[in-house]
Amino acid sequence: MKTYIIGWTAALAVLCAALVYFNLPAREAPAGADAAAPAPSDALWTTNAPYGNAPGEQLPDFTLTTLSGESFTLSEQRGNVVILNLWATWCAPCVKELPHFDALLKAHPDARVLAIHSDLITDDVSAYLNAFSYSMAFAVDEGGEAISLLGGTTMLPQTVVVDRYGVVVYNKVGSVTCEALEQLYSEAASHAPLMYAESAPDSKT
Image (cartoon, rainbow, N blue to C red; front, side, top):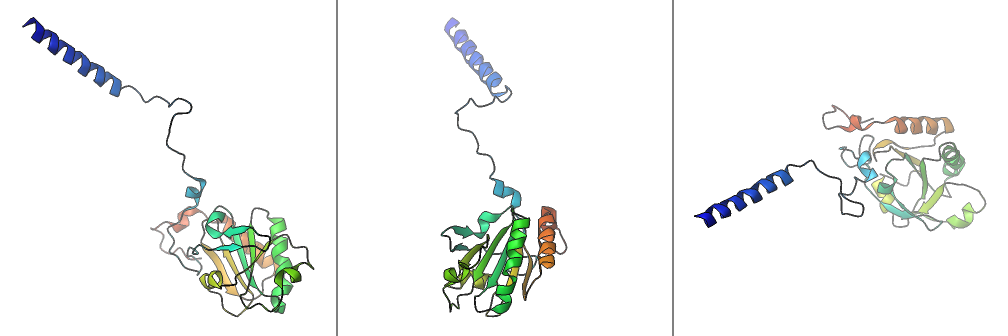
């Protein structure tokens, strides 16, 4: 009988200790201990907008290698306004407006500006650009995949403006002015995530 009572007493003591342990306030993990990784900054720039290339739609991802050898991936630009210019050396209006895009980048260094040359290449693009001192990035879409995603055609120039959430603000063929680019940048930079909520009646610009 004495052994039986001792056994039950020990069991109750273990149960009480377990209850106390699991109900203690959570303690901070010691330095170096595994802990849940913080949410990536990209999570701040997510959107429910559908994929597409029209205003109000989330532009599909693509990657191009710039003429300077760097990789430009659209999804990695979240958090920054992205301005894409479709152009060609043989397109006079395209060449004329290139300085406008470079001026915008100088005025807003946080923007991401990429001039994408058409896959219809008649000149050495790098050699052509050597005559200028543009600070923006250039790429040649030799396969035409990126231009296709942007809804591009042989009609040039074309400008696509994407806000910090990856959503198209503007996508049109035709020349733009410095004033128009400044206005488009300001519009894209001012967009808030709530405008893309599923409950929004119309998320298109």
